[in-house]
Amino acid sequence: MSHGHNPNPLRLLPLLASIVAISPLAIDMYLPAMPTIAKDLSTSPTAVQNSLSIYLAGYAIGMLIFGPVADRIGRRKVVIIGLIGFALCSIALSFAQNIESFLSLRFLQAAISSGATVVVPGVIRDMYGKHTAKGLSYVSMIMMIAPMIAPSIGSAILHFANWRAIFIVLAAYSLIILAFSLWKMPSSMPSKKNRKWLHEFLNNYKTVFTHRTARLDIFSAMFATFAFFCYLTSISYVYIDYFGASEKTFSILFGINVVSLLASNLINSRLVERLGSRKLLRFGTVYALFTGSFFFAVIQLDLGIYWTAVALFFLLGSLAFIATNSDGLVLNTFAEKSGTATAVIGTLRFGSGAIAGPLLALLYDGTPSNFAWLVMVSVVMVFIVQLMNLRQAAKL
Image (cartoon, rainbow, N blue to C red; front, top):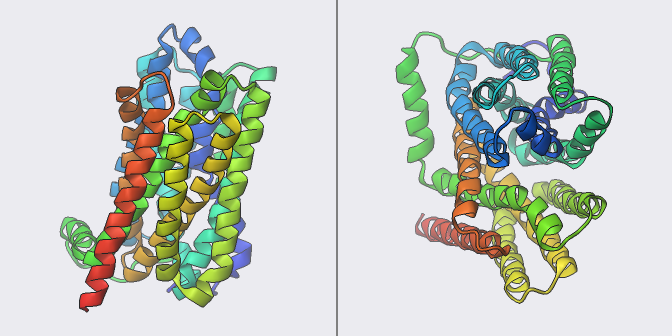
């Protein structure tokens, strides 16, 4: 698939992971600065919180466009465009003078950065072949570290400088990654150039969406990610405002939850070659139904912060099983169209993430029960979708 020498997967994985880490860094690094940004741009805290949903929406739309473009002009070029664009938008963000320009630049920053990240699963697929889920697990593990440390990096920068410096640091990060990409990134060229571009673009989407099994797996990934974004959006409120935890306790509990995601990905990468992604996805689905119900019960019975933390620990682990394995299955179904497949998965996932915030706000009643309900609905939906898949497989 990739021409010339086939790169050693282990040498390339840290680079791929640092490319993918751009999104969680851009999403989580400015979280501690939100109140200051609101004051500085003289706007409401809600307006600044909306920049998270706007970022996710921009990211989803960008993936839709860049996925097929990467299948068309080759991945290396798209990575370079994405990294340069991200750096420029980050620098512009550090000069934003009002909330309107801040929000528009966040949208642009997300849309163009998706070009860099959308190609990564395809590169991994080239390197790992039918063990794609294993490669994806490794990258997810390295990538999990980013959201774990991002808020602390943000706080550290705020300690020494103002919030604008956070975006300068993001720009610097993407330029360093750009240098490594120019040096190490293999150029994989698309196989055919003659077909009409738009026709191919729409055709690729049709292929991915009309494949029944893949469509159900994509929906599973989407519901699992939606539950995860509900977690990201609610968690500082739940721990700090509702349970009154200190910021230090919050960062410890947040870190423990990331450990759960790491552990699931590690276990998954060990088991996937033996058992296959399909079995692990079914295991994850049943496991999520149990952990989701447990979390729901803990919140409804108001059992306190530590039971909540325990329930979330297992819940997030089960969501990781669903997301990683459904992604692996979808990518292996569409080897030649991995750019489009990744874009479809990414668009639905980040698109669903973009509505998590508004939905949580809509159902908010002063307790975390909005979060518990949305998680419960998500895991039940994954279960229903996978039951449909089981029936489908039984017919074949």
